[in-house]
Length: 297
Image (cartoon, rainbow, N blue to C red; front, side, top):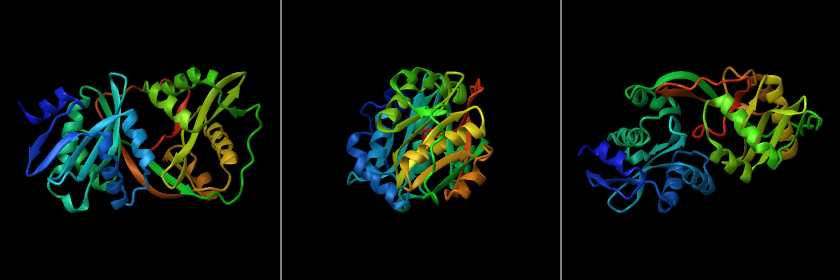
């Protein structure tokens, strides 16, 4: 049986595919410390807690050397039977150039099949993904920093704290904006973070979640019907956080970039959004103005 078929059948059961003294196995909790060391080698700001939540919500593969050291990772997150995102694709610097990234990606695609896959790629990864049928669909801009000053929260008549009774409508708004059914992920992000909802005519029309992540806090997802509403939701989150390190990953077309720069959250990098397979066009009118992170989308 071909390697990719074996991976697909086993999904994330205990399997091992050996080649050149490297073993491909499902990502498990015992690999978290090794994954953290890999991300630190790449200067990616993941904490151990960030890796743990990612593994809790998704699945993936690692490559280990003969000594059992994690030398590469790849993870993916299913959103129902038709859609998924992937990310945390890292190959140790000492192991690059040997086709390990391709092996991981082929295993991931086989396991996620037949779902449409969305990812955000660095410039270095574009060729690998394009060879596998991914097409470019947009650009995500990473903004981060410490706000120049404390922000005033919008009036509670416009933006208020999220309460448990909001979760159903938040999940509906997220589906409208993304085309993805990802209630489990939203529940977990709300559990570990602070949620805000924007209310108009007595009904929630947008939401934002902020949580500890990486070097500080991340604000995302942010879902709203307009850039002005998205800004109000971000301001509510900033008012609660104060002057701490904050990250916001927003689409280049969001109309938020100049404002984020002006308040001290400067653009430090960007990534190319890529998709393999048919997309679920967002139903709207809610739109995704900031992603949960560049792996979850």
